[in-house]
Length: 124
Image 1 (cartoon, rainbow, N blue to C red):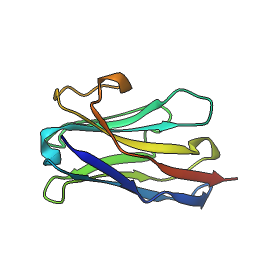
Image 2: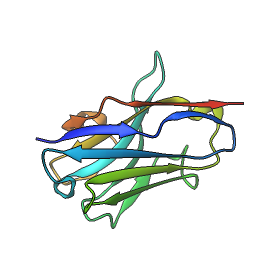
Image 3: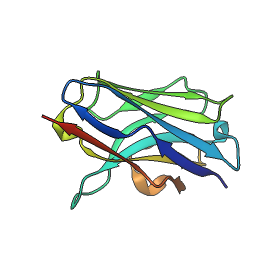
């Protein structure tokens, strides 16, 4: 089992940048496919990005492609989400998730472990 803790959220102006971190404990993060999802009040949780165990393959939602980057440092047991050119519609609670199966997915139901989330607010 792994515990996930997100950090790095905050308030930023449109066009700005933030880097979210997801620190894992309990088991090495290299055992998991990792992903970021986000959720706005009253909306479904939506896929943002995923990264394979080795970090060799990444995938992004169309809405963030070209602006966000996902990376991982397995030696630090941490996954990152670099968010550039932020827009007000990026405002959400961002969640880190881990999948034991090893198969990257955009479907939240396939992920086994979740962090508590970190709030990102982008002002216009």
